[in-house]
Amino acid sequence: MKKQKFGRIIMTSSASGIYGNFGQANYSAAKLGLLGLANTLAIEGSKSNIHCNTIAPTAGSRMTQSVLPEDLLEALKPDYVAPLVLWLCHESCEENGSLFEVGAGWIGKLRWERTLGAIVRQKNQPMTPEAVKANWRKICDFDNASKPQTIQESTGGVIGVLRKIDSDGGVSTNHTGHATSTATSGHTGAIGYKFPPFSSTYTDMEAIMYALGVGASVQEPKDLKFIYEGSSDFSCLPTFGVIIAQKSIMGGGLAEIPGLSINFAKVLHGEQYLELYKPLPREGKLRCEAVVADILDKGSGSVILMDVYAYSGKELICYNQFSLFLVGSGSFGGKRTSDKAKVAVATPNRAPDAVRTDTTSHNQAALYRLSGDWNPLHIDPNFAGLAGFDKPILHGLCTFGFSARHVLQQFANNDVSRFKAIKARFAKPVYPGQTLQTEMWKEGNRIHFQTKIQGTGDIVISNAYVDLVPTSDMSAKIPSQGGQLQSALVFEEIGRRLKDVGQEVAKKVNAVFEWHITKHGNIASKWTIDLKSGPGKVYQGPAKGSADVTFILSDEDFMEVVLGKLDPQKAFFSGRLKARGNIMLSQKLQMILKDYAKL
Image (tube, rainbow, N blue to C red; front, side, top):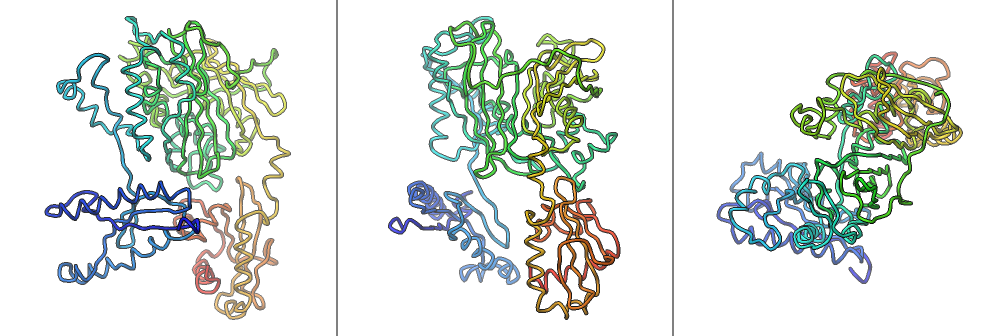
């Protein structure tokens, strides 16, 4: 395998090895041992394109013929395991070092999970069983658990703990509870620290929850695309990108930065930058990588610049920079500025070109926190009182979302593909129920803005801007014809496959089907499948005459239907597929696609 620079190895483990089973100690040990062997082979073989994966199948065999009833044996045929093995052996399969349970037509991937744990000793102090007992609940708490995938990720956490316990430099906590520096070298060690990679998985449900959390409403018809999954141009609000990245902060990752000891009660979100490289998919699983880009000394405190990159496969989808202000931890002799910082920009010195207002709900913070920011400061009056506020305050990123919506409405007609980047500085808190007023200035493709509290005039977001994609670039991106759409390839293929049987099919169907394929909410192409006149044909453009049925759906949803990932009936009832005319003829269309075009 090494000589040919290619290899695929499949180990067969068992649920007995993974979970244990009464009376099978030797068998369980052997089967889990295979998994350990497979994991090492996967690491050693990867540089030579040799992949090793493990399956734990549930299947009937000659050994179980006398144990399992006949109908269960039939349902657990090895035929329902073999396809997974074949795929894992295929040269285009990039899976490596993974474990799968499989049986009866179901496949699931397994992985290790680890709690955040607890530090139960202090420097120069003995570690005691009493300390273990006192921290037992935290040790066993799987909320915000990490999922280490390599031995480096596993041991890295332990090394970080050793640094915290044994470091003589870095940051220590003084009697006031503020984070203060005792040596700048600790900050040097923190700069460049990479957090363990993490995944952010979401569906259109989370995207809708976020949109409602930042004020999207059924009262604004153009907002429907953000809060109704059945909308033909359903989209994620661009600022949902911050939710994808925030787990690096919310998951307690700041506590793992070497050389820093952070008092979370003194951490403020100072600024935020978000850049999208393409519109966010309506659902997905993005892999995120976070790194401490720099640490700045602002005198009254320090600023941590944290960069978070989110990928779909190898494609970079979005980038965030969180600027976190640590109150009381400055004056350590560090630099005040950084070329890595995304700089806030002052608004123009003239009257704004546009102003939009929105009144936040008294439940706004309670709704927004469902997107993952569980800080009790935003809902618990007692906690807010301890932090010096009269009542719970609104999340800064919620106000950020309101403001971005206003810019998108005013200058981009809610077209998410026009959104490129946003930068904002958080100036003052907002209380749920207050009215936000976004003042906007257009300068080319940059929209400067600031957000105020209507009535008091307090500026709550300052020195902010949104960069839009120029409309000239958009016309090059959105095809006016179907040639650049995935659906065009399918229609062309249907035409080729029906060429020899068109006459026969036309006799059975006797109908004309017209398709309107949309992109970004606009009709990008039209196709017709004519199985009424002559031998039958497929061509681009509207029907020459009248169509019996017209279907309207996006290019993406069309492909989901063709690939069998989206049921047409569910798509119809959810509004993702619209149809007019004699829709009962769609039954005949199904016959065309399955029996004749064999798609």
